[in-house]
Length: 182
Length: 154
Image 1 (cartoon, rainbow over the protein chains, first blue to last red):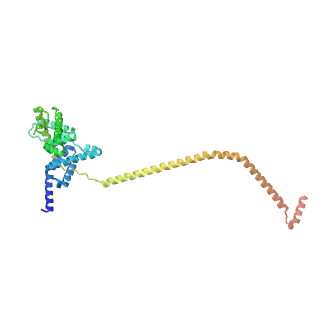
Image 2 (image 1 turned 90 degrees about the horizontal axis):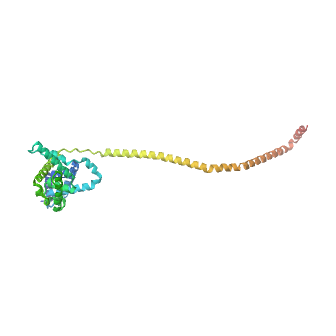
Image 3 (image 1 turned 180 degrees about the horizontal axis):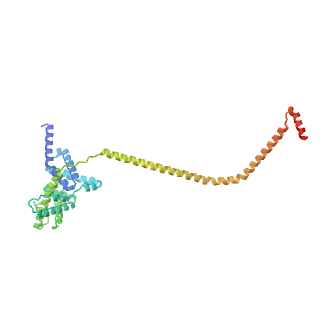
């Protein structure tokens, strides 16, 4: 196998990874930043960075975990660099997570059940917005992206114990928002 | 997959509340998925950047500001320098004018006296010159002069 063929194969592999995971990365960044433009930009940056470092990806974790780690780091860098300069602009472009409740599939619920379910989704959205950045990241990776604790630990660079602690606090706050026990 | 399965170490809770929480979290996930997919597929509006216009506008504003500031500065500078000149001239007048007048007044009698003396000396000199000139008559004119003197005596 010559170098050109290897490069072509790598490009095809990467294209497949992009096609498979782009929506998931965008979804995580959108729900985490609550800013459509920012989520789109960070998604592009994430795949650009992944493309540059694709040759160094050894497959120790899944491609999704690797991409998610890049996305989380980009998000952290963004807030660290732009916190002072652009926070007002970001606020103006931001959307509420509880907007998502309008997109709840109706399923086989009655109108009343659907209304109640939307209200609860809105409450969860509000609770998630109030979480700290790290708690929100862990919560979204767990309950929206349905990643395993070990994968979350690898993606965030935290230990599994820390991930569990953040997750426990986040769920406690969501439960309190829904009117249950703390 | 329930919250109880997911989080180790979470305090025990009411089963009914847990099922409600699980339901809410499941609905939250479905909503986020549907919402983000809708945003993901919708066409983006790309705002055209017009850097040249912005630069022109900025350059125009900068030039205008420089001109206005320059004009204002020049006017103020001219006004201040004129004021300084006027104040300096007034100070000079106040500082030198009054003693000069006093000096003039103090030396005036002496000057008048000297002028008067000079005038008298000049008058005397002229009178002497006149008498000398009138007496020095050329020899050729002596007879005529004697005749004139004879007429005068007569």
